[in-house]
Image (cartoon, rainbow, N blue to C red):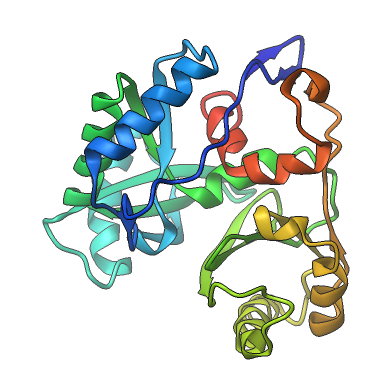
Length: 287
């Protein structure tokens, strides 16, 4: 994508199934097949950009949201490492730890997201991208990517982004212009709606939303923004609204996005499949 004249323009895109047995539980199990698949689809779609930003499966990434005193950037980097030891329960030397300022509060403090990722996992992904002929410039986190995308949606806060994938749901609560909390809920490969055993998933989502309410003097999440492949199911919005008693919406029209759907030969609603990728592409322009 490109950001020109205060508008995002989709320049090129590609969607390909992950090769069978190439990734298991968030770890790359077949580097050659995966890197070759990426290389081939980029050639087929004539994608020339080499810089790459990725996000790794959420259950492989640990995130914590904290508030710290305002301080110079050079001091903050060292302070984040010390804070991580207090907030990440499985802290070890085998974790890559990083932090990012999300927002400066009215009382001059810093809202920060801490992220921890297993070093071996990160090296596997970086090596795979290099084998595909790409130049990896960052490993991001899904909550930040989705927040970037939907920050221009003008939905009343607090709201919860519900990214419905094939076997897990990513939940991100946005409040006061920043990420308040995130969670991952796993479910079976059957349809979230049709498989009645997935009602336990709804209970987990309800508990996550209740956590926000409890921590904020009874304030409730006002709406659910549905995205991901699961959002393409025509009845998923009514199902979520009925079970959680919170309005569910699917946002496809962004005032600062320009997409020529005819040129890319896919329907408007298929943007849900690219929501994470678009949010990653916005990194560096939108916090």
